[in-house]
Length: 343
Image 1 (tube, rainbow, N blue to C red):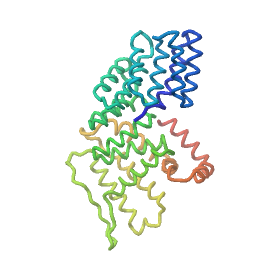
Image 2 (image 1 turned 30 degrees about the vertical axis):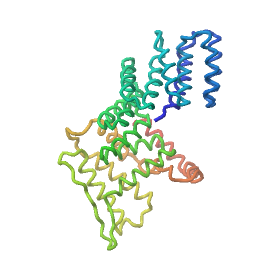
Image 3 (image 1 turned 180 degrees about the vertical axis):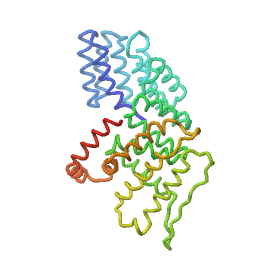
Image 4 (image 1 turned 45 degrees about the vertical axis):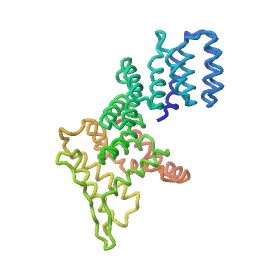
């Protein structure tokens, strides 16, 4: 995954907070370079930063910004080169330079070196979510599924609103063939990011996970193909219940419901049964303490319908979305207030 957008944000942040004491002339030049970078004029930004390097070749600020622009140009070796200069002096830019260097090494598929870099960053801040997130991405690329899961958990403990950690946790759970955990993180991702291409993809995944084990034959018989699991398999009961809930969709009593109503009904039923399950020793606390705890509160609120409609916005046209926002303004405001109180 390219972290360009996140790194750009930290470029501006680092300048604002860390470099008020830099030489005035360097500050002026760097501001010009950041402006060019933000316009995606990366080559121009680099040429501007080179002028600042003539004034101070070891400036952590300038070298970091150089690394950032080279990273944006996908010149990862140059990004690493300029990141390394930041480490030559004592300064407050090391954690940001590790982000650029580690991401560059990962994109060069030098995974062990990338892990080493991000582990060095953790020595500066052991809880910082972007370090754990990037470590999770590397483990995902290396197919180290359990390590990836642990890293995404750590990222979310520091920043529960980091949508990409929820997204890749979903993908990792699918790789592990863990249907219920994949759904848990997918729903929360959509709550944070309901209106993007990734949201469309995630919504499609949810529908697929709903239907993959349920079918209706030519004679109208409903079949649930429940895959064999170990007796101690986490969320075994919830997965079986989900199949039954989806099967209801094909019964005569439920066939008059719209697709949106079916989606919300299945979601509500799933959250309800999950909130009633007792955690076993084989299950991670995070699934229960974060996701299920939140969904339990949600099912006991009067916001389930708003939640379901909101997280499925990506399937509609812009005109339909605008209409929904206009018609549901009061419900959205009330839901927002509830979220602030419960998340």
